[in-house]
Length: 75
Image (tube, rainbow, N blue to C red):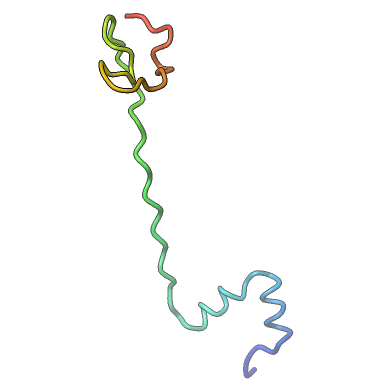
């Protein structure tokens, strides 16, 4: 056998094995891709502060939308 003929290549491509076949011919191992950096998550806790400004607000400046974590929270 001198090499694969066009029918063999077409069959490999149809089965999805063409890439694995070509990699096996070269004897090289493909480099593994690095996973994407995960975005930091906000903390999963909330400390209610009775008598303090509502979460997400400040004593001066524009008023941001209310914090839904504080709705109905009691200490």
